[in-house]
Image (cartoon, rainbow, N blue to C red; front, side, top):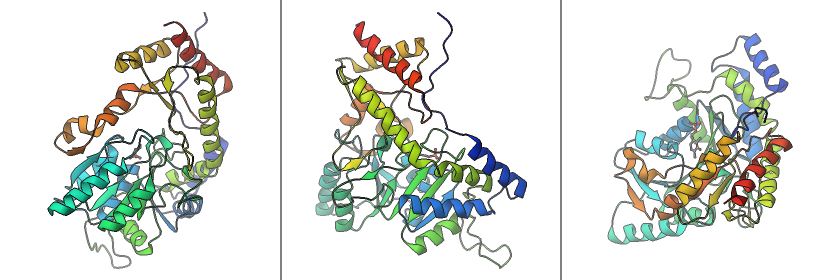
Length: 384
Ligand SMILES: *Cc1c(COP(=O)(O)O)cnc(C)c1O
């Protein structure tokens, strides 16, 4: 057999459009955080997701950190965050000295279980314990969280709702109270990431969106060292060097203009896999009536009695035929620096980790590559 190329898990989709805008940024000599591409990128991004304001940041983690500052999170405050997510969802709250309340996933969405949170808020409220200052659900793998109960809970208890939409750019609702809206625009603040493996990339970057003009102004201030304009080097608080560079924004602008195609590609890939795997003993990613997932990182759950062994054996087989696959995240409660955090539930996240395997799903994946993945997976199940 001839040596086969590797089918990568997820790689950026770049062409002459990105080259052209990045070259333009370089030619302009405005390569740093002062330059027209940053404000153009913010304006087009806000319009694309349906938010009033957008503030570009150097990473999704930086965006979440600024969001925590905007919400006034400080030492001893409690932040309720999804337990089953990438660790950066929690890092920002920890930077601010907050205590985490980790909320297990709902098996229907793989996102924060609102019923678990509701019980805990009621319990804390009755016993006079401190309530979370922020609830921060992460829309996992492009699947919108159940936002209706989370919005109601935050209103009832006076809690700030911050969405970690790092994985869900382009995802939204087709029915229910938020029909026609996108993830990141439901809470008071939404945060996105443009890391290299996200649905669109700036090399590294993030975005804060909000409908609150004052919050947007403060976000921009904090990301630029909280410098007071026009008064020489005067800073009215300690800020951050979190602004996105003009070069990165040029890349982002070119990517953003293809976002609809990228989302369509992710959905096409998901539909191909769903059809091909329909008869296999695997669980497919959530597909719910009133939400439109982007299936950002297409992941299946194996079903055997010893799922970790089965997951690893399948991954090893895929690797042996040049198909990259990767387990999902270990939940936050199992991360050494977070082991003392309070945890609600936890078994669903453990199970998603034990059973989950992400498959190649670059937006530029070819039909041949998709066929190779499908054949590799179905062959492995046929041979068992
Ligand atoms: C990628 C990601 C982040 C962090 O974004 P960066 O741009 O890598 O800092 C935060 N939360 C979730 C859920 C993510 O997947």
